[in-house]
Image (tube, rainbow, N blue to C red; front, side, top):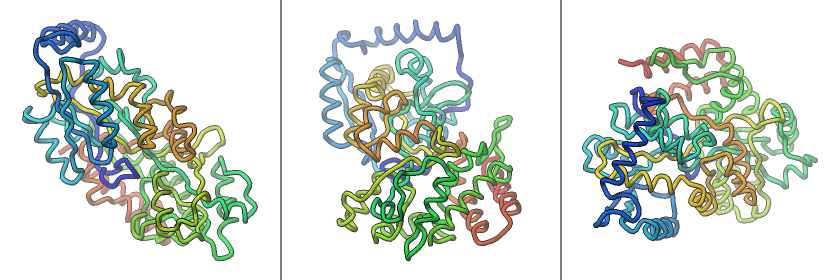
Length: 437
């Protein structure tokens, strides 16, 4: 990702291969074959004569050293004939490295990838189909859609959700109190009213950079729009639909209630640095940004609050972009069957709970949201994650982000250009990048 929205990447994450997996009766056959393969290869606990070493690639910063050590010790104690070789990878340059490993079969047996990267790696059909395990063992019906959907192609699951992060509103409790705001907003309408109230007396109601396209994506989805739409295997830009333009209109209204730059993103300057000055009511960021704020201005300790990005009604928060990671197994992995057991453990309740509490992540299932209930920021994130989405399910989305036409489109609208005209141009650029050549 890695323009990570906090601990999780938001950039080049992708999803699963363009091949149709067998369904129904074929799944029953697959069950028998899988059981036979596991037993025959000696990968089931208590079988086989020698230990199998499963090589696992995890990304730097995704899990603490302590978590990895605890998981490894516990897994190996329960699977006497399997050893784990966990190797931490750098995000920089990881795309080419994973692609080569998937194609060769000489790499790891299990790989952590950004949730929207799965398709890029699997386009050639190089990932193991984990649909059966998803339904039978992993409770896929409860997965966060922002993690599960990018890992699925044509109904087959290739990426197993591991963890998630998404944006929330971080606010200055003192400024809310001084302005007479006694409760955090739960609807867009109330949010605008509160932000207008905050935006006075030398304060900014909200600091929102003009090209924060991840935040815009949530507003577009909340209106029922899309960044791009799929038909017949190809994607076309959809920023010029009425729903998408309504999302942009709301973004413009909110962005105008502060002094955020119209022609820059949230990293130029870093919005945490701006908020740390103490005169900004709100920013939209992952909860972990609070640590950066407090490092810059320790006097704000105890004064930061969090709430989900408000939706159109109080019944549910806004849709949000979900960053995070999925777990994949190369089709050519030497110990793929054993790697399935590692995936099931990492994605299961026990280690999902441990990871969420250790790293302040959102667990991979909506039914596990309660495990972070005591953490205000993470709980707000989990509430939003239930309505999380990912970028369009195309292996070519990485090319879009490399020269993203959404960002100049936003700046054009914010500086007074006609939204419809600017959206048509941006949509055409999206289509040109996404077309199946």
